[in-house]
Amino acid sequence: MNMAIIFIRIFFFIGITIVGYQAGDLIDLGLIGGAVGAVVSAVIIFLERGMRSVSTRGLSSVVFGLILGLIMAKLVTDALDIIIVDTGAVFFARLISTLSFCYLGMSLALRGREDFNLIIPYVRLRRYDQSEDLVVTDTSAIIDGRLVDICKTKFIGARLVIPRFVLKELQQIADSADYIKRQRGRRGLDILHGMQKNSDLSIAIHEGGFPEIKEVDAKLVKLAKVLDAKILTLDFNLNRVAEIQGVSVLNINELSNALKPVVYPGEMMEIKLLKEGKEHNQAIGYLEDGTMIVVEDGRRFVGKTVKAVVTSVLQTQAGRMIFTKLEQNKH
Image 1 (cartoon, one colour):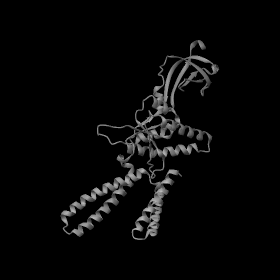
Image 2 (cartoon, rainbow, N blue to C red; image 1 turned 90 degrees about the vertical axis):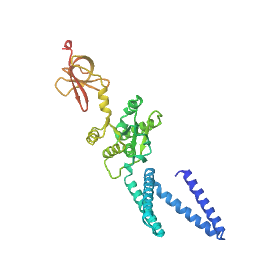
Image 3 (cartoon, rainbow, N blue to C red; image 1 turned 60 degrees about the horizontal axis):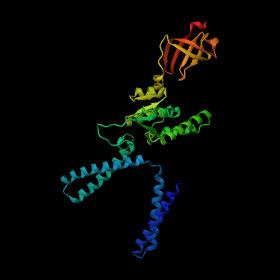
Image 4 (tube, one colour; image 1 turned 135 degrees about the vertical axis):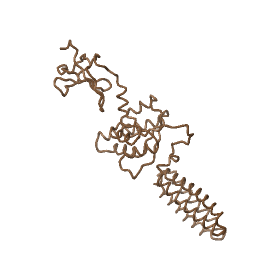
């Protein structure tokens, strides 16, 4: 436990006990007053410890609802002052309406706290003609690593929002029994830590968790709708689900494919053949950006660098494939 919190609690306990003793001493009941002060301070500390699970977001929702309830109660009781003449009846009407509206306001605000954009800590109040772009980032985009370089180029000028449930998922992957998953999770946490240290990047951690929703992808889509934000991902399925529900998606793989060099049929390429292809006499090579090159009749040249002529280009969801044939003098 944080030593500063322990010190504050001890200071609070001693202070309230002394105040209770001094108050009791005024009527010659100093020890009783001190005991009462000690009991009251202990109860308050106990309640404070029990509130550790209450998030700041939930507390801000309650305060918002309380203010709204007080405003509604004030409007209703002002109207009752005009209708009811009896002072006693007006007093009780004020009391009942104030308690009722405060209760309803706090309950409704707490139940629908995810929909109150005004109380989200990192959404600033602004003029109607100003806007702040937000991009909700999923686990795959963080683990991939290319996000850091993309942000450094300033192509993404929006504020990156990292949901708490994404951090939890990253932690679970980092604690996985599978070695590969564990390494991926730890790399993602390291990447995120480095991004937070970069003062040029605007990153916010979102505390809302949508406990009524089980799937992480569904939570991401819901959060993007609430914040009127885009989703940054590499997940093809999340990409499609989000687009179906009207949420804009930034897919790093699609960006990468769009930035690959454009080649046309008839162009000459030099390529090192690394392995045999699936079809008869085919060989496979790769460009520096990972684009697969399929060379017809190139199987006998595996391990060598050859010149080939582009015959066609195929764009798939997995990426771009370039089909070529050997230059004539190779036959």
